[in-house]
Length: 457
Image (tube, rainbow, N blue to C red):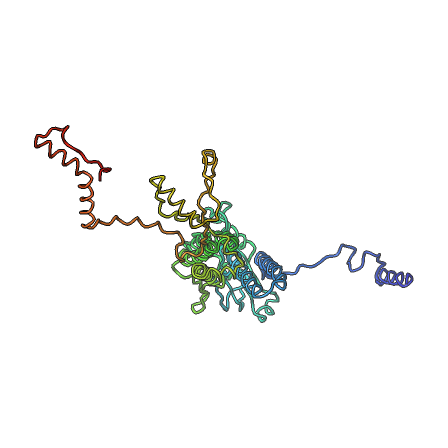
């Protein structure tokens, strides 16, 4: 085996007929290091968008792995929650960084570069995002063979950060500086012609200013929607109603971004003519409609969760795997002590009641009367309190608070016969006093008046 390896090494080292080469000089020319020629390819993929998509795909894959360990309908409910939540989050981030809020494409014959005097048949594309534009130029194979050159461009112009001064100097905005650099690099004329429409106030054209303002406000709203989406996922494990509120706010924020983009960008549609018949006209792209549909979806889903939480709290709690009793409030309701007991007016009545009870229970042991010490050290046991629970989600259920006891009935008016009887008893008790005063009025001696007591009857 060692002999075979030596033969292979010697063959590689001395395979050249021109000169003798060493072990590390294979695949090299003129003794120089290995050189790889340039490979010019168009900018066809956005690294940020690719990274975001890859991130959410990894999250979805990680969550889907644990689904086989869940039993019953909970597996389906978990799959739906994960899919919808990750879709909303991915839509927010991708629409924020994508370049397809507006798109335009046209196939025409146009000049290629300044100084060449040659025309090409090419497809020109325009892709507008919140932070800049992409302009593509793809020539037909016939034009490429005619010019003996591969024509496939994708140039990006950015308007982020400060707007800058007018013109194309060092204090101008980022977009204007990139446009001037593209002119110096000698980019094809169709690309420069489209980019010129977006320079800030260049030649009195204001499309660039309006698009920059629309993208600025829209991207702020999308960044606002991202933490609202995060809070929505958290609140769905705590309080479903507040989770529904934040989901609706997320959708309204995204819809507001769509409204701002549609109104602030420019009330005149962007039209870039190349010939009298061939005009590049921009229309709303995929990101605009994805943001719009996602915003409407968030509002609809939030409204459904809110209504379900009010009408069917048990079913929606089962879907989200939330305990209904975790958001309950405790209400302490005291029992009605009832009408106050009437205190015995005399000891005779108490003794009579005790004697009657002893007659009814002849074998019962007599109760030991409480002494003063027992009264002092007696423990007052409060009335038992009944505990009732009412969940926050069951708003439409009947109130469980016990109503206040009704006022005591008004005393009934005594019957006329009872009134006469009470008057007769009063007259009977005061008969002797009345007779005494009557005899005094006649002039009788008080010592001679005989009074009858109750014992004399």
